[in-house]
Length: 452
Image 1: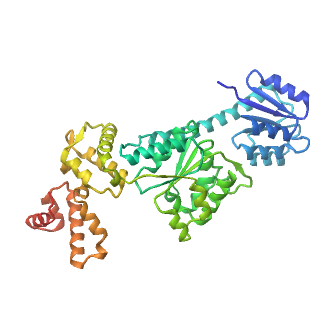
Image 2: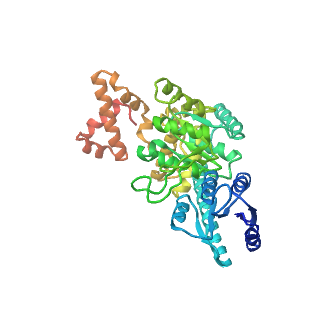
């Protein structure tokens, strides 16, 4: 394994040599005499820790510390000085210094503080990596499908993955846009680094900026400590922004600046932090139409739409439903410790006839529910939700505002009856009791609606 790299910054050659003799058995040591040289090393090399003298020519240690953190906030910095003052120590800690050593100090003291600093850096890296691994594991399912549109999608993913360009994934809700983003990440050069996903629509509006860019301690009420945002957590890897069309105008402007300048500023912070992240955004709305309505920035749209990937809805590739069903049955059976093997031909035919407004996500939910509730190894027709067995009622209810009152009332009545039947697992006597109907009346209604 590569040894940690320690950069020593001191204008006294004797001090630099002393540090080298003390550290070279444990670390790779680079030493320089001033701040500009230190910044050049940080920009050009992988540095894990800096031992930084406060009193330097050209720029003092506090200024060098601030600039190092702007280049790579993950580098740990230990300040070294002959005279310790509270004011300087406070300033250093506010800028992110790990610790503060006063000359003279013992060799054991130096090695101990370096060890703690590197342990902290290692832990932060491990947490970031594990977050990415967890996200990758949770979304590691293959993109299942052999339809020509899916074959085209696979080819496009492979092409896009070879670049680090910004990507915009479009498609209806539930089509698997995040799976596509993860596939691009896994097949690309950033795969060893984190994949971090965030859905701004699922975060309270007051917290979105902090979630994306992080915040400093005391930036607002409740900010008890510094927090890294999703951009920093994805450093070197990929940030997936789902439902990008929900971002408010102010955050759209800030995101545009990040994409242009490749740097962020934490909430409550005063310095820019360089970021190296590939951004993949996704939307289920027409962003170009949103631009025309003034709901989305045109310049941000074109910045995001460098490479466009469209994910087809499930209804346009119904031939893939058997493959998806087999995949979800196998996974759900393993997850719920069930021995479910297949669907009956009648049940599979019903799934293929359904239009799937919720796309692959809806199919996955239907299979999971069926696996949980079925008692045998085969999911039968009657094990499927009534919404799937009678797909037309959902469409008609949605269009009720265009129907005559009698038709709209009947469709609403049917929706209520079917929901009750589903809740009691098809027990007509129990459903009639809940609805306040005679069983014969309920049977006549179901016969009229051609319910099995």
